[in-house]
Length: 347
Image 1 (tube, helix red, strand yellow):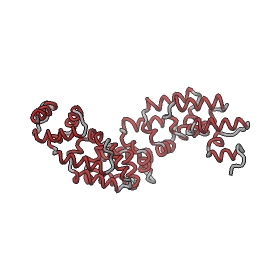
Image 2 (cartoon, one colour):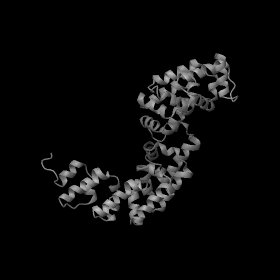
Image 3 (cartoon, helix red, strand yellow):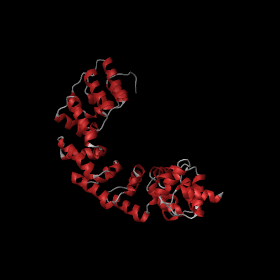
């Protein structure tokens, strides 16, 4: 019976791998015990040839360690499927040092587990050869260890990026926008670690050129990148240009659009259907206001539509109160009610 199962295992991988029957059967039964089917097993062997020679004992030890650091057992199969190499690499050579190092970056054990679950490949990298140079690179930009921990938690793929061919280019590009002072580049990377995953030539530079074409000054562009770096990451033709065209169709002039974008950059990436259109329609048709008022107060697009804009407009209408958009929206609910005497006896 054992020989039949061993033969079946070799058949599954149809000559693409040469494995000893004893070791192959051992690791195969390990995967079967953990609930993997033949298709999943084959895919993992395709991803990681080293599994052919992995002893069941090592796989079991690595699996148990993943559980011990807080990864839920029901999630471990997914972690291993994404990066089967985890079961083949030395526990004390790579996995434990990486977990310990991540733990020193101001992250809680649960956050370390979440980071590994999100991007298991982080455990296949060397602390000395990969993580330490990365930490030194980011620290040179004024990023603290605590901030680094948050960055890796949000985007653990950072560890797979090359300093020379990837990260250095991002930093050089941001510096070319005039952000090479007062630690501004570090602040941008901390605010949006995902920006480092984009191509300078295919995404970041075209987007910056598009923003400049709108009439934004160098200072305006810097403000956009520092406050809302995610805008720089969006595709010009798929997102930014359609939003621009919608604003123009709605009646905003070129100068007003510059005021909107520099004042509240996400206006170029918000959903037209779910965000921009309902607000503009309500502004004009219900509130009876002009577009100039939004150009003067771009944060109009930031506030919750139903919970703040609609509700406060209703309360003001009941008292026939006129005020500017900023007076209406730029305060919390308590201050709003007190300002316009809309509630009595509120302390």
